[in-house]
Image (tube, rainbow, N blue to C red):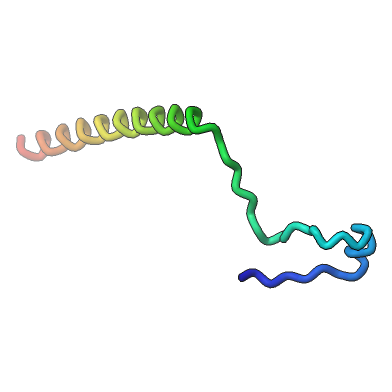
Length: 67
């Protein structure tokens, strides 16, 4: 549990409303599921491309060492 305090001055400035957000808690932003899926698919495609390039480079390096 995150302990945090609010000053009397802040309470007065907030008109004694105790509904004050914890400044140490990060708000989670919820995205649209379709957007998240599209972004995931894009990232997976990019990862596949990088993996293929890395495999190609490793194969070339192995072939040079064998020659």
